[in-house]
Figure 1 (cartoon, rainbow, N blue to C red):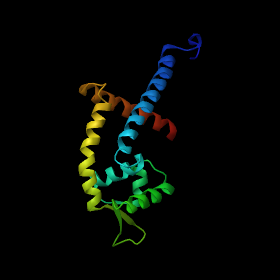
Figure 2 (cartoon, helix red, strand yellow):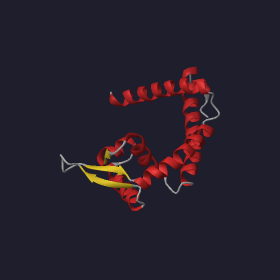
Figure 3 (tube, rainbow, N blue to C red):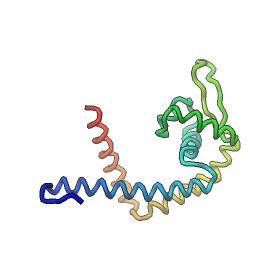
Figure 4 (tube, rainbow, N blue to C red):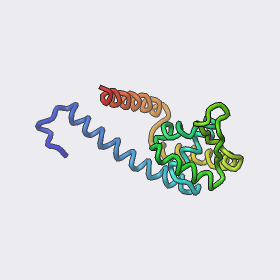
Length: 154
């Protein structure tokens, strides 16, 4: 760790917060990936299926933004999910440039089965934080993220 003689208390806490957040995310992500792999999916595939399951059909071009995926990778993921017969493509009737990803009946059945299990796993993974503290953490982390985002926009 950095010699604390040159740092004020807020700087020390900021550095420590970064390390603690990073380590927590790494461990949480490891458990989440393990959970999702047990369904025969990777994290990105699950993210796309979850989006379509909860929000309905989506333009393929918009999926990448919503699941934080590079637009160059979204076609590959959609192709893989289409091969597994979990989604299908549907052309937009009013704009030929737009193609929608749509959950198939097989995809909906899969998500009906695995999403409750995933939600239970997430509850267990996040079980180290009391329910009322989760709400506080959500709001604080949103604020932290927005602050960092605003720094990038300057």
